[in-house]
Length: 128
Figure 1: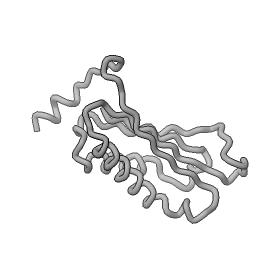
Figure 2: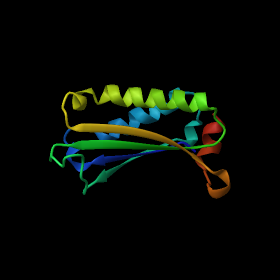
Figure 3: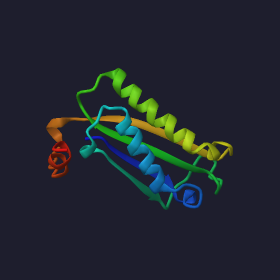
Figure 4: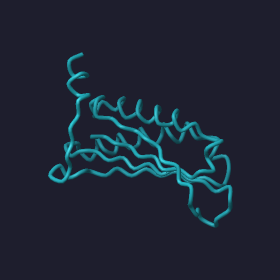
């Protein structure tokens, strides 16, 4: 159940290819070896309304919220977070060359008793 939601300020549309960023995050998540391919979901949500720091119009942000199921050690979660954050940071290096960008990542564990799922993709990928 690794789901990555990427929220970003609308002023980044001309600076970041969000489809490419989602693909990078997905590849990096899978490269950790901690998650099944059929479970990975990465999507981006554009924030039309936002206020960042001192509210200069060039200020922008990307906030990544990574929700995962239980069952991984603290070290595994940390390793996954570090890999994702490093890959995205490297990809967005040009934004860090300005004093107007903020990036964040948080990993949250989902309580299995309060989460319902049905996935027809798993059987297809598991049979390969």
